[in-house]
Length: 371
Image 1: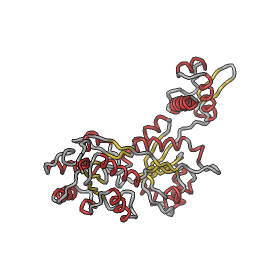
Image 2: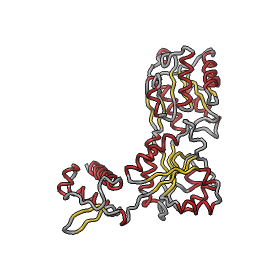
Image 3: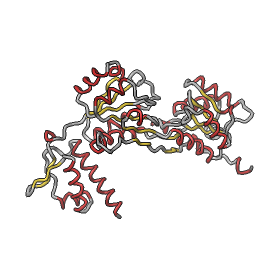
């Protein structure tokens, strides 16, 4: 019961805060009387009073004795906050880049909370010396910065520049260790666990002969190739002929599938390095007369938003990129609780992933039931 009340309180707080910051509740507007506002929001007056206390502490409302509760004018401490997105624009045209799918979430949540977003080419800033870059960013009057990429040493010039700037920074697509080397807030996905979960999902569908198509490295095993083979061996599916490193190119992916089909024991399922590899594999299967999912289950990884519209719709390990973007903004919104506060660390969030099952893996294999 207490947890339910607390959840409702946070829900109402988030709603009213978003309405104020987005301008849906106008500056200097008077809120309804407590009894009426509580009724319209479906909460008890005690819960509403707790919410109003929180909003007052945030500097978003002012309560005047005998007059009521008002939205605080922005010239009294609620200026618009600007988030700078430092983006590798040279590669942004590549549809496989996660930033393409994280940024819409950033922009959506920023709009809800009355923040602004602005994109700046990363190469423009990283080409400056550190002091010049700090001066440029100070003049830009930003609240904080978002960066992508990862596996930072901490000595990269633009990382040092951002540290010297002294503003909140969130790494929106980080890797283990980036949090320690940079000191910035981070959001990352557990690649090791999510890739293993993808394999085990296919096993749960009865597949005993599973191929994996990888890029230059194995997901979660970037520096431990032998560990990847040990994992597959433990799962009982370690056939070296079915473990391929393939350049992201349609012809290469089609040739790989053709090679699989010439083996004595052909795979019944393929887990692909990304949804984009899987898209090429689906097309290749169609051209080769391989029925998906009856002859071959195809599974992606990462969660391309268009996967549901492929033929057949693509199953995937979904990282929830849009929600990651929304969370980036919420981290900035709570920066006053963690940034530059002694005894409080910057958030290092391992974001939850999800197996999304669609038609491309729906067929269940029963061979194992007879062995």
